[in-house]
Image 1 (cartoon, one colour):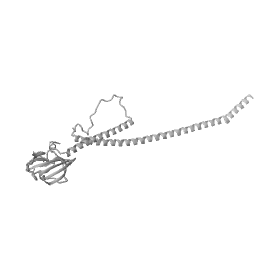
Image 2 (image 1 turned 90 degrees about the horizontal axis):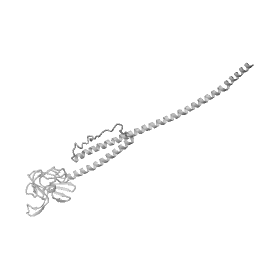
Image 3 (image 1 turned 180 degrees about the vertical axis):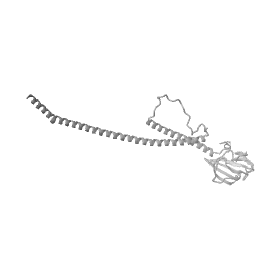
Image 4 (image 1 turned 90 degrees about the vertical axis):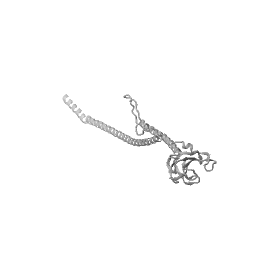
Length: 295
């Protein structure tokens, strides 16, 4: 009896395991697997979203870097153009100021130097610092160009004043035969005001302009004989009288030192000479101070 009961009990337990415990374990395993799978899906989705976000960020950074690179390329081109203008302006100023071209050679890098930094002390320049330095360099170049323009304007004004202001003698060879001011008139013998200076020389000698300008008279004029008048601007006019031959006509532009006539004795004259007058703002002035001026 005892053996039969124990055997029956074991069978019952086995049946219970087969009908209850094992299915329950299967259900629990399925639940766990489903939960793990769902969790994996959530994690996978989060990873995908994170990857997409990082990819978009990388694309934005790449686009911004490309735009920054284009901007830097344009800015460097502008700086190069400014440097070329400054070099050309510097060379003009060297020529205008008659400076030493070897000392102010804008085609070579200025001499610079100094001891090297110790290892580990070299500072890296960050992008913001680099952009700030670029902006500062741009500003400095603009300021230097403005300053050089002012200097150039000064030189140009100075050269223009020198060009229009009479200087030197109206002849290449000869001598002064009469000065400006009161003198005894050679025809009347009375004391009269002489409006210019007389430069005597050989018949046919060259007569030259003492400043650049425009010819406003070229022909006979009472008392002057064959006369040439040149308007230099800035209130200056010069006259050259008693010529034998005129080499320029009204409207011609002449430069300082240009031969405009040949010396003669036309008009009210006692011999070959050029009567030279300087007018400033409508009045005759003593040509002597201009004759003594050299360029």
